[in-house]
Amino acid sequence: RVELGRVYTQAELGHFGELEMLGEREVRFCVQREDLTRTVSQLLAELDVIDLSVADPPVEEVIGRVFQAGVVA
Image: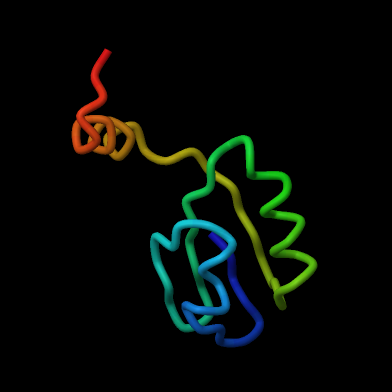
């Protein structure tokens, strides 16, 4: 979750990762773990970031994505 100091468009934010939620001054991205450090660095360098938090997605969401993708081992 990223709280921003100004309003950004979806076009301005889309290259940072999959947009899960776009509010007026708050946005939530879904970023692969291996891309996290690079993405956070880019966010801080390129945007007016007021607050940033990183969290794993809820287990239910992960399970839902697995079944949607049809990937069950």
